[in-house]
Image 1 (cartoon, rainbow, N blue to C red):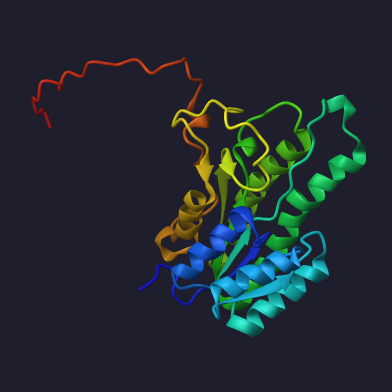
Image 2 (spheres, one colour):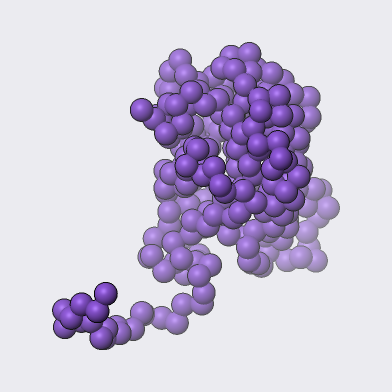
Amino acid sequence: MGRVDGKTVLISGGARGMGAAHARRLVAEGARVVVGDILKDEGHKLVEELGQTAAFALLDVTDPASWATAVELTENTFGPLDVLVNNAGIGGGNRALVDIKLADWNAVLDVNLTGTFLGLQAGIRAMTRAGGGSIINVSSIFGLRGIPVIHPYVAAKFATRGLAKSAALEVAGLGIRVNSVHPGMIVTPMTHDRAADVLSIPLGRPGTADEVSHLVLFLASDESAYCTGSEFTIDGGVTAGVPLGASPVVSSPLSNGENRA
């Protein structure tokens, strides 16, 4: 028996990267998944791989009508919407704050923030009809901390985190849970051209999209039934604190085998 048997899931930005990994994981655990994306060829190819429990919806997350169409397709194909993964996002910035063009700022916020907002609206309407559900906002560790030169991305990811909290408070009485996921450096098509050592990672390596998918699976499942308005970090320890070089070896008072439990 799968952990999300019978659940219907819509994933935005689901055709590649973390979104595709989430789709594979959720289908493997019994869900029926609609892959929503503007990348038609990649989306159809993924759905063909996943089989009869997956479908593709052309989804432009910046367009309310596109969201409505994707949700309608989801409901007509697999039944009431149980889970929405607000995953679609783009990078952007890489300029000093004073050099960012307004058009570039707006482009990042349109996808990463407005897209999430519109997803929340569409998901809440559908889940109100369904009698409840789980919405997962994919944010970032840069929704928890700052970093220079990618200011539009940071602003959007902080806001995505905040929206999860305010929405969770508003819709808890409807049986709808809303949480945010905060990946660190994850190997995806969006990060493949970045140096692996761009961050000091205590665990010593970037994460994989599949590792993030285990967390998304938990939040999609009934195992997380008491979790809402929360943030879940998966970053190899990056946000735990400021590393001071090699970890010191500390002698434990129990190192001689004495058991004081």
